Image (cartoon, rainbow, N blue to C red; front, side, top):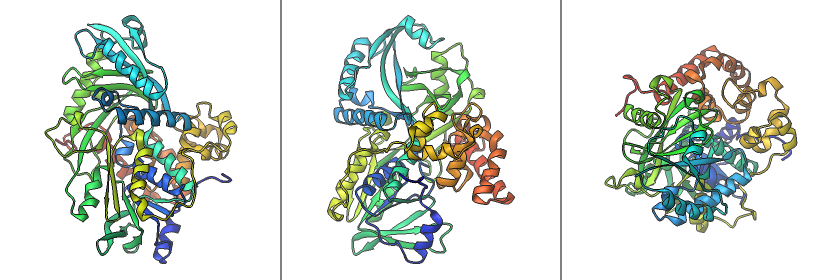
Amino acid sequence: MSSATSFTSRAELLAKFERKECLQWDVIVVGGGITGAGVLREAARRGYKVLLLEQQDFAWGTSSRSSKMIHGGLRYLASGDFRLTRHSLQERERILSEAPGLAERMGYYYVLRKGKFPGRWAMTLVLSIYDRMAGIKDHRFVNRDALSKVFPGLRAEQLQGACYYTDAVTDDSRLVLRVLQEAMVDGACALNYTKVSKLVFDGEQVSGVRVEADDLHSSLELRAPVVINATGAWADRLRGELGWQKRVRPLRGSHLVLPRHCCPVDHVLALQHPEDGRAVFVFPWEGTTVVGTTDLDHSEDLDQEARITELEVAYLLNIVNSQFPDREVSRADIVSTWSGVRPVIGADKAVDASKERRDHAVWSDNGLITVSGGKLTTFRLIALDALQAAQHLLPEAAKSVDDRVFGASSDESAVQQIDRTGLLSARYGANASYLSKNAQKSDLENIASSRFSLAECRWAIEHESVRHLDDLMLRRTRLGQVLPAGGEAILAELKAMFVAVLGWDDERWQQEVARYTSIWQRYYSLPTEDNACS
């Protein structure tokens, strides 16, 4: 790549739309999460003229609020879902190989206590199969004394030890952005904050979409023989225009973010919750410690961000304090929270939420291809299935392709001289060398206790379609989730960047601070009387 890849120029593309240019596409993808990004990537490198539209920000929904794990899913294997587990493990190894640092292999310790199922030998059998499917051999038994050294303060009562294995942890939002970047290298276009208001039909056949945006003078029609509905938990909404019944069951998973000193862990602790036996994880993420997740039906408005409830806060604090009784973690220790909504296929609420299958499904309806469900880990396979369902409506692919999702950095040695952790290469791929070369050395230092820098903030504002302050604080970086009070202490430094790059005046800046503060307090902090939900 001879130059840096910026995200699609919104002003230029919208201007073309209003001049009645670029209205015809081969594929239009609706939804800017990991599934939509994956479809965009696969379509673009096959030579299709492809556009992605997202009504909020990229990764705004589930794909910035998952449990951050690239994994095979032990419970899927235990329940007999060998196909999903095998595919997930193969994709996990692929991501670890192609994008080291974007996903980080990490040790998982599944705690074993006397009288609790599963025991050591059952877990050893399951892990033997798990590793065999992945093509590695990482599992072993860790005795009680060794486990207590890895996790000081772990409750000793009935403790036998743990079964050790490996999976991976990622920054899901950066994963989405990196996949989008790779798609744009191959000529794809993507717009955030551009709403698909309805489908366009020629007779009974879907032939495009009508779009709206604040910076469009009027709504307009974009045409394509294939529209791929990759809106996840929102998939029923667009598919409902063709009269189909609901198939997606939205499930909420919530998490607590704790300062590292409050509950320091360097590996993932996998635990059975004392209340219901569900698996809950305590794991290191972006310099903090995360506790999650819950698994509940989500009946709130999907157009509002999901938020944690008091019951979920208590549930997650219970698991920490039951396992680390000397820590006495309380609400006052919590830095932030997040809740995400998983799109699970199956509308039968009589089935326990935690027991619903995590497979994806693809439906083909007169030119509308809908894909929903599935796992973060298998996004590439989900995208390929969606494109396969659309194949009969598409011209022959213009390019032959390999199966790599991620390209390498254009100048890895130059980046590594500055970025010894490899994080810049992981997050920005080939753009990492441009980012580092054009940044002051001091701006590449971590901000406070986070693993993000001012240089990354500037890069995101300049090149990654940032339209609001919350885009930067909650998705391009995680400063709003890992720093105290949503990172309010660094806002003054960031103001100068927004003024210089985007031309914001004082009034716009104050509006953005008010918007971000409201979002953070309502959806990323603790519930209060003002923002409580059932």
